Every structure is written in structure tokens, then in C-alpha cells.
Image (cartoon, rainbow, N blue to C red):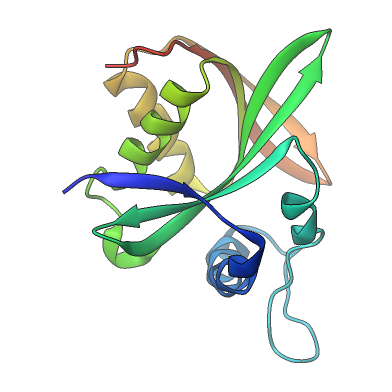
Length: 166
């Protein structure tokens, strides 16, 4: 069983939107800044940008032709250098803890080698543990600092990934 990343097409935006509600529900465990709207759903601000802006790419994480999660991927320019960001990463609960998220991230990094920036809410220990386990597994050197973003204390890591990530 191997995972596959598939670029999400505009006609599939509603599927991503459905998954986003689950993702934000999970994320709301770690922050008070997320809440449901009048219709009882979480809203991801500016999700449509991932289908319009050329530097933003949404991917489904697939397993045996089934959607099991997503990655929202960002290309940015900082200090005249291209930098990538895995803005959001989500796996359905039943697929967590099986190495599938790590495999999906590995595929992304191999396809887009370069400098990366990732951010986790300080309270989101499962995400922090995921990333640190990923760095260990693939012997990635990273720098880490505590920052405040949108009023939230976060752990920010930067690292470089080559195309031959083992």
C-alpha cells in the first residue's frame, strides 16, 4: 500500500471543503480562535485562493484510489529565494499512525526539493511529534523557534529537503 498525491481540480473543491470541516474541527482542540458559523460548520478563510493563485496548490492524499486526506502547499519568495510551506496537512483519523502522512510528505518534498517552512500550534503536540518523527526518520536537519502568528504561540521549523529523500 502506497500513498499518492493528486492535485485537486476546481471541480473537486467541494470535496476538499468537506474535508476542511473535519480538519478544522480537529484543529479547534488546540485553539480558541476556531469556531463554527451560523450553519454549524467551520470555514477555512480564502480556500478558493488555492484554485486561483499559481503559488498555491492543493493535493489529495490517496490510498488505493480513496481520498484519505489533503496537503495545502505554498510556494513563496523570501529574501529572493524560493521557499516552500506545507500550509496544512490532514489525514482522516483511521489512517493516522500508519506512516501514510510521512509517505505523503516525503513524496511532496521529493517532487519539490528546496527550503521548507512548517508551523504547528504550540498546543498541537500530535503535529509537533509528527514533524519531529519525520525529521528523525529522514535525517533532516532543521531549525526551530517559537513565534506568535495571528495571536497564537506556534513552533516554526525550517529545513532543506533534497530530491533524493530516502
